[in-house]
Length: 169
Length: 190
Image (cartoon, rainbow over all chains, first blue to last red; front, side, top):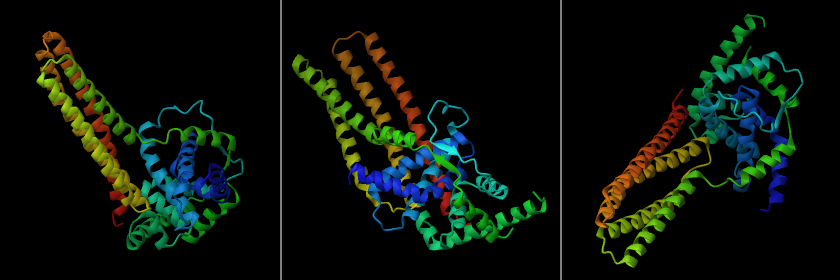
């Protein structure tokens, strides 16, 4: 594959699936600088993954796998290094959209962020409508394990959302 | 809110992207990172192989050239060449093993754990390897008629290297433990 072809595929994937990457970035990184850093890590991994893509799964599944895997590992790194403002001076790639975001969406992201790295990935896949089979394939665990985790997370989210409704925010 | 309502809120963001991308900065980043594609394991392995081969051959040639008959230095040379061969064999085994993991997050984690285990093992072995090299060098210097203070300074240098090796080894161990915790979380029922 030539570099031109690789760039073409990369541009196509990014234009069609950037929302997927944004969701993962937003769910795993709390600060704007962190979101930019995680986005950079993900796009580097996506770029390198293009040559390894064998069309055995859909592009969405592939990108989810690459992005979630990068985000889970990044979270570990972030916990260690992130307190400093070491990223000042670097050129930012992500610019926050100025569109007014739904308050309930902000609340949902906050609740997702409170989960551990693995539960966060399952929640994102669940909210994006992946089947148990697809989730099991992306995560590399059994469908029954996916089911158990989803039931627990769903109950937790619904219960918290009721409290959120109750406070009338 | 019920779950379906949460999904609707979630889906609505697909029509309003959360961010805009600075494409020029993004491609600059990709180009700069392409040059850093070599993995740290790869670099440390190659470094170990070349340093051991280089030092082993150099010691052997110097010893032969001087016709000193310094047995410790001959043993040291053989030991270093043996260490290079050992690292090379382990490197080949590691590269063959790289193909065995499936393309899931669990598979990626298993792969990362396998690399981390390899780093833990090789860093420990190379740390232990400092001991015979230090002893042989010390004996070789004394046998070659060098003053004891020079031999002691060299020994001190090896002691510092051994200490730094322990620090590196602990970093790999910690990294491996973190990955294992992640995999445990992923595999836990519930």
